[in-house]
Length: 331
Image 1: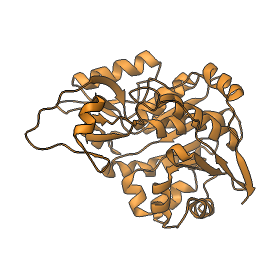
Image 2: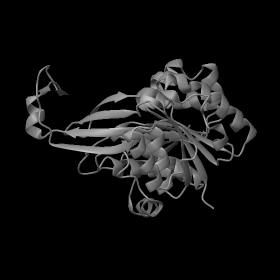
Image 3: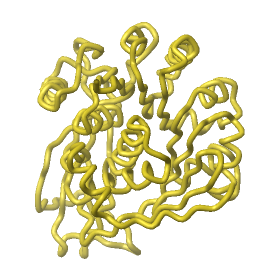
């Protein structure tokens, strides 16, 4: 029987704008892409796609064979309609979605640079409306695994409901990717301490981990976070790979090397989805780090956060084919 997962957080309609190399060179200043007021700049390509943290992880988990659900808010506008159609096309359960009237769904305009890095201009739109008053908490009561993605500051009140359900359903697991407001509060804040104690997999990038813990290095951050009660920690660092711990050892996994990075949007979500899938299927943390790296590498090969997300068959094959040497040392 496929595991039932619920991804909580945002869904976003993304518009990617690419420029040719000549345009990028003309507007480069010390490695930065600079635009001057009044300029008119021709694009090389425009791509529209669906994104947003919980949208990405629910679609990713559905492709990996889970019975995946999205729990969040969209508007009744044309972008919300596209997001809903995408969920249904991908086989994601939409019964926990709140559709609000006369509001704009979350959207992003993403300027893609030649190296795949991007500048994101966004409006949270209806994602900011996720609140305890419209949070479909009954949807997570029977979940095998909850995936809590970045949420808006005013949405943090739903954490109480999540903790209550995790306390009652001790067999339910949690992947948590903290958002900005949670990271700003620090891992010792009351709400974060409670949530960390219920977390099966905590995922952060290196900058977030250091800020969250106020430690000097990723290794020190891992040690601090393990003391908080989190079972597994994964910290990513882009092309440098990832580091993680299961409380016994620290593991270092290199990033999968690829010929060309088209767009890094959604790489973190892809990593977390792959790692979560591995743990759902009772694989160890080194394998989870590999699965996360493989999924992320496939996503950055394409424009958009979801086009490169792997199926379960693809993932199982790549885990056998791809050589990623995970180093291990005692904690």
